[in-house]
Length: 395
Image 1 (cartoon, rainbow, N blue to C red):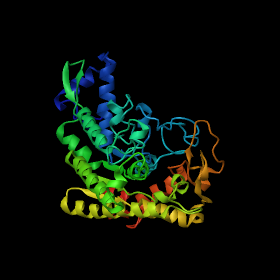
Image 2 (image 1 turned 60 degrees about the vertical axis):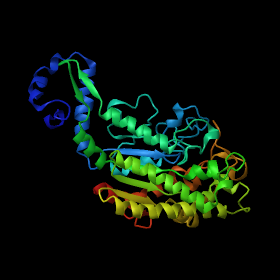
Image 3 (image 1 turned 180 degrees about the vertical axis):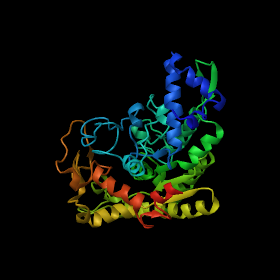
Image 4 (image 1 turned 90 degrees about the horizontal axis):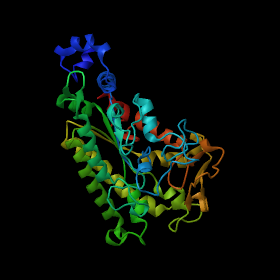
């Protein structure tokens, strides 16, 4: 037990007394507080990146929708067929983008916010707030049921901050101590990385569904892209005001090439839906410009743009360079390109999953996610601008 860690929760002057009375401690709650909160926090704070805070949609969701009244869930086989924990709510055959980023940075993948067990020591390496079908706009994805919009995810992050500030009773001394004091919490947040991947569903489950949503009648493609970026910047600045200082903001990939869009009305046979890709371009260009402006206006922070479109575009244009052979249809699903009905419970997926870019109608396979993750962490400015995630972590 490291005394320097114990100073975070109990006064240094009380250290020897706690040590002498350790064998007399009979409350399991005290043991949890001392071992998990105290030593765990000390270990976490010594890391260059102590925690990841994750916001967004199915690209980074690790199971929040399991606990929500939503029909958009992936907690069933064959999701997770190649993941050692099985079907957890991750939207692929294996690991998520966050799992790979965590592996590369040496930070455990944080648990889903909606899980009732995400309390106490489980939040010391951050929390994942992402929710499949959610978007930047509150209404996006509403036809799937409840989901955490990006606005709600910001509010949920505030609730987590309350947990970090929470006082807990030491039953042995009848005194209350904070999990983190204000200074420690500020340092913790400043060293952590916020990963945000949102916007895809504002197109897939909003703008591109005119029978259900009015946005395409109200805005042209450029206006809608501007609307998303302007809403997005307010949400990012809200996170900044709450203490986060390092941001990786993932752009939108070539949505016109996902199986559901290839199978739709806007795509010519055998081709991506070029019109959809053009729409997404307005958002990506705006987001990259926003990153420049944010870095200029907030020198205390660093904002990084992840070129999702460029990386997946490279994969689709040069699949053999990444050992992919199937780029136009899903590994699991039904209908044209296996993209008209997404992966169903107990459906038998493709066998050669590592050779497929897309897992289901909307989401990439573990293999494709790994490529994007590696390039986000280690890639040049064309992949991550103005610096990559590894450089962000070292700041």
